[in-house]
Length: 143
Image 1 (cartoon, rainbow, N blue to C red):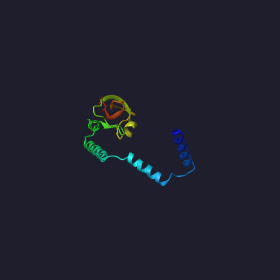
Image 2: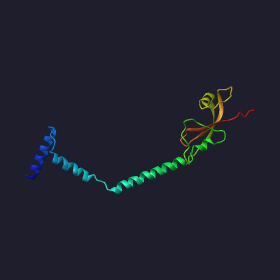
Image 3: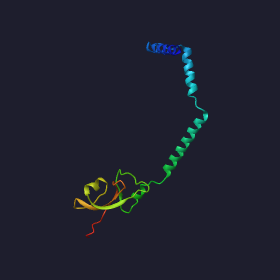
Image 4: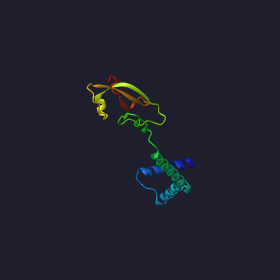
């Protein structure tokens, strides 16, 4: 009997919702108060969030003051950083390869090469991911 009554009450509630009726004001206030009671947070919870935000702000400030790891590739003797290349990560292994590059590719990088040919010898710094990070044009060794 109790199960039938509770089912009937639930069905009546659904019928009221479907027809657009609102529950009585007293019932609405009771539901709002119950919701507020269930979702009340203690004051110390907010202090934890504030402490976490302060730690994040401090870490961000320290990170901005830290030296940039990409400076190592920029400071290498005679090498020019490749535009838009990812910075060198701390501890990343680099390797230098010798290759022939088109003069037009070097021009796009801002490296002017007074060469009569279309290709020049160059050394390229490759990151651990195999992508170029810096280039150095090798002087003609036949002179």
